[in-house]
Image (cartoon, rainbow, N blue to C red; front, side, top):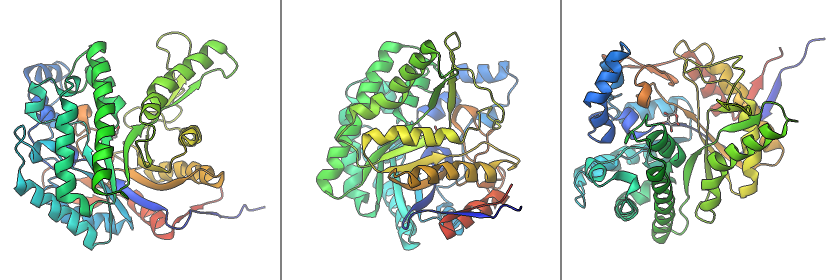
Length: 411
Ligand code: FCB
C-alpha cells in the first residue's frame, strides 16, 4: 500500500529566519581577524599547505555593507520573518572610547530597511571579532574587556535599541575560548589554558552585564546569546567509561556556560552542527561519518533533537539561531533542512518550547579559518561580481517558511 504524504505543522507564530554575521559578509573591516589573515605566520602556513591566500582573506566579503538591501530582498524571497545579522565592534568603536556616528547611521539604515520590510531583527553584538585596540590590551583575557564591552553595548542600545527585536550579546563564547585559546586556530591563536579560562569568565561577565544594560533601557527586551550545542553520545550506551566521558564533555561544552548565566537570559539561542560519538580512548571522539558535509562534519539530524531535549532543564524558550551545511553542490541541503526540522517538530510535539529556526546561512560567506572554501549559503556568491544566486534548496526552505509546515514525502 502507498504511504501517504505527511504534513507536519509548526505552531502559529513560529519564527523562520536566516543568519549571518558582520565580518563574514560585510567586507572592508579591519580587526583582529583581518590582521591575522595577513600575518606572516598565517601566510606561511597557507603556503606550506599549497593554498592560495586569496581564498583565506575576508576582504570585500559579500559586500553586504553596500548590498544590504539586496540581502533583505533575499530574506523576503525566502519568506522569512526574521533575519539575524551582526554589528562590527571595530567599525563602531575604531579607537578606544571613540564612537563612529557615521557607522551607526549606516547600521540604522540597515535595520530600518528590515523593519520596513516587516522582518524581525535579531542583532548580534559580538560574533568573535575584535577591534585592534582591544587586541593590544590583551583581548578577552584582560578583565577590562568587561567594561569596554559594556560601554559599547550601552552605546549601541541607546542608538539602535528601538530597531531591535532580539539581542544576541555574544556568539558561541565556548568556541572563541576553545579555538582561540586551546587549539590556537582562531585569533588570538594561543594555546594557553590559563588565558582561556580568563577569557571564559570575562565572556560570561560581559554577557551578564550586557543583559542588565539592555534591560535597563528596555524592560521588555528579548536578550540572549548563541550557544554551540554539540551532541555527545557514548559510542556504547552500556559502557560506563564512555557514558562518564560523554557526560563530562556535555557538562563542560554544553551546560556549564548556560548554568552560569542562569537568570541572565530571556531565551536560549541554539546553534547546532555537531554530533560527537565518544570513545573511552584517544582521540575520544570517533564518529561513524556515514554521511558528511563538505567540511567533513557528520550529518546527524537526530542530534538536534537530543540537544533540544537536554536544554529543557533550563526552562527557557529556545530559538535555533544556526543550523546549516557546507554543500557547494547543493546536493544535500534540501534534505538536510527537512531532516533536521522533522526532529525539531518532534521536540515541539513533545512539549519543548521552541519558537524559531534560523538557517545558516543566507548566502555563501567567509567561513573563518576555512575562508571561502566552505559554502553554507541558500544563495551562492560570485566572488568576482558579488552576484547572489538562489540555490535550488532556497526554494525548499522558502516553501517551508511560507506554509509554516513540512511536507514529508512517502519513501
Ligand atoms: C558557527 C558560527 C558561524 C558559522 C557557522 C558555520 O559556529 O557561529 O559564524 O561559521 O559556524
